[in-house]
Length: 240
Image (cartoon, rainbow, N blue to C red; front, side, top):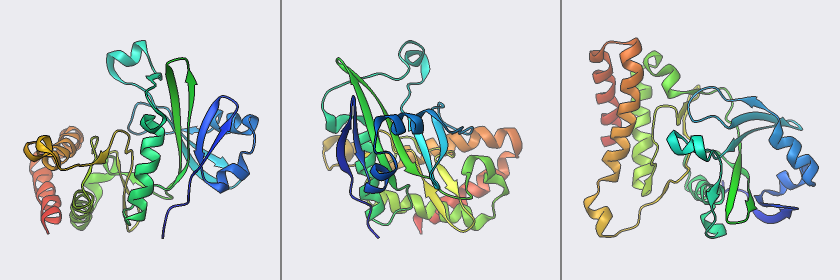
């Protein structure tokens, strides 16, 4: 299965990459604005700015790109504009299309858009929503051991395809009834072979980031010994 082609179009002051399905549902700026303004706020993980929406029976997630930390207090959602290819929503949309075509369990892109104001822009991505899933961070210690093993295998698949998930944490892995998914690929990228990447172990960096995020929730709910056992099972899956 391949991802749907994305067409470039303009809605007045919005520039959009979108599937044909989205263009039919939102043929005008008024309808697009209504879609972006509504929805149910996503509560777990992230910095906010993500909403679940139902657009004519299509269940999507709309995510605005927001800054965190001290800078986020000053400038919440504006980024400096260089080129269209470097717009964060467009970059993530194109990466997700490639990953989907590789067979990785990532969201299907519906649309990516940005609005430019002078030398800055703000942007949003719209993705198909996975049904009946929970963040790994919300259920990790309730899962059977084989699911931790499978998560390790999934991360290995990602790394074998030379993808650096720079924010791999337990809330960016979703758990379905039988399958696991990866989300939030903002600023993620395919790793190029160069001198820097020869010395920087980006794979271990991803794993350490995931481990830290799990430690935060394990300290609240479960003994450390249980976590260490489960983490070793995840690593066994990764190394299998």
